[in-house]
Image (tube, rainbow, N blue to C red; front, side):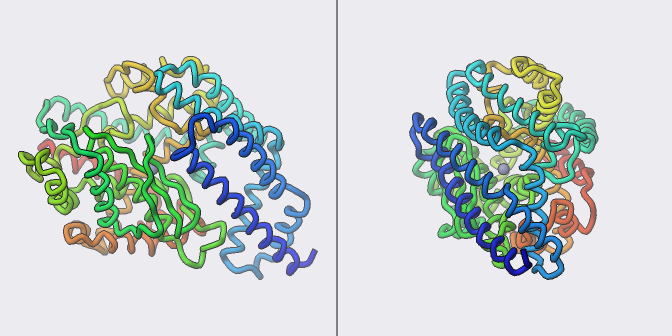
Length: 500
Ligand code: ZN
């Protein structure tokens, strides 16, 4: 096969793969937003068929030959195709070590597992979900042993979400932040209940909250012709290309800020996808480089920007306008303090910035043990509850508010959670570097968040998958990742809030 022919076949197959990927993505979005409960079996069958088709498209002699020829001639490829070929070779190397039948069977299981998890959560009954989690853990352990038998199985999974990340690095990272943050949290608890939050649970009509979401999208300067907001119990972002990004949020009448920070968090994910380079459109590189870098964006907008004094000052007049009765006796300062109140709690997604990483540590410890076979799946709830008591000092009343609160494991995602803590830490380092070029506080007060997004676009977003996570940090910070920025950021912010 000559180079020209190889390139032609490659492009043809890429178009096909992207189209299938797009279709499966829309189906998955539909399953989360619109499909009725009993659609699960039909969908599971379709997933199985689609995953067989895409497996065969990727893993076959011709495709491997094509990639080999292109790789041998990589100096003749443009930089985008060259990177695509490198990534495709890596992914096929992994994929072909896993028998197709197992991948197909797993795609069916994960569709069913999501339904089982919803039911288990609604009934607060772990035993409904347990057999599915058992299969998910077994599949992940098996693929790890097939693809990378020389590696620690959990490291193999981590690497899938954050290239190069190991449990040894995470052990160091978490022990460092734990020893710095736990004493700080204790000092705050000792201060007692000094922040007023009585107004946080006042009823805010959902119609008005939807208006507020639209306003927040405007503040983030997100073009609604490229990005919609759907409604789901668990907010998420999905993307098909830079002109079709979907975020979702949830509305609770008595939890205005829950929707507010969901929109900003998912909006942060969306901004990354919406600002990938035009030159990447239609390529395999037109999305975020890793989950850690992605969570760095979402948590940057949610917390570093969204929970800053400047941001609260920008949006509070709108809060007052939309909810005049509910906030008539609340000052801007009180609102700022309330959205930053640090308090050990049960639910990760509602946790404050300071205690958030402790929630991640619980999941990290459990995943590591599950994947290494050091704990049985049936013992996860009791271990979960024990760790919540140990790390956060809270008693878990039931599985719904404990082990069943997150959807990730039901989707087969083991090794994802550390991305949240890592992303938060990346964000703290990025903002220090950004401050050298921008007056962030002033820009936020003047409703110019687009300037901040531009800065990130130039250093991270426009490159999509062309750069790996370490390069993204290097581009933005001019240095390697350093968790001390995160510790300093939290220590400084919370010492100020609580007058320590
Ligand atoms: Zn996120």
